[in-house]
Amino acid sequence: MVLYQMDLSRFITVYIVQLCMGIIYFIIGLMILKRDTKRLNQLFATFYLLSASATIINVIYVSLFINPVVKILHFITYFLFCFAIIYLLVFNLIILKSEKIFTIKKHNIIAGTYAALLFVLILIPGGIIIDKSTDWKPVWSLPFLIYALIVISCCAIIPTTYFSIQIYRKLEDKTLKKRWAFYILATFGYFAILYLSSISNFLNDPTFRLITSIAGLSLYGTAFLLYYGVGRQIKK
Image (cartoon, rainbow, N blue to C red; front, side, top):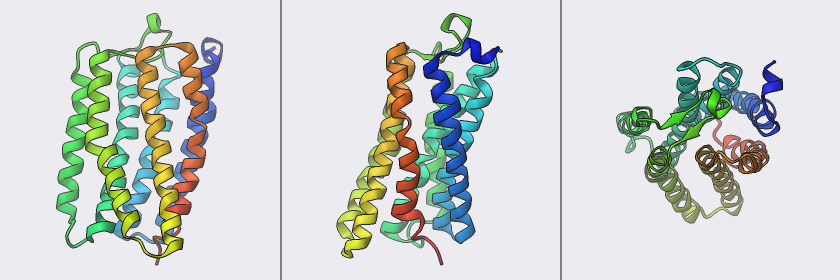
């Protein structure tokens, strides 16, 4: 019954792209922790595990037709995808400045502030509409989209990109430099899909949703590029 009501683009997005991506991200996250549980490993693995959790919640809510449950679960899904980035930012800051300078306290302040700003999204009146009138697909209002893009861009994506480039410029070893370039490329892929998905929810256009779903296939490459670029290096 659920599959009959679901169009092609959403089926591809949820049951092929996101579910399989979630499984891959979950496995890689565990692999990183298995290598070592030091702070850098924990941070990098948390990025993977949060992204994996978001996909699992998404798969759950897409099969439900109950409000406000689906609205809340959709928000949690988006929140986790966005919040995962902060762990890449902290990861970069520690590599750039060391664990002694960038303490757990500073990490918690940044993560807590970012989480609070993201939480404001759920308080925007009419920000998310997801019910029978939208064919149970999330449709965002313009204020919701603008606020979301401002927060994730200014607090997570731009800083993460900036510090990634700073690290790249400081690396002298050619092999490390090459691997870090893969890491940067992978983060760009993740950010691009996050932007596309956000815009897609605002436009609510079937063609654009399908394009976003197909583009989402790049997240498979993102998962492995991140791991190849950095994940394999942060070990004992």
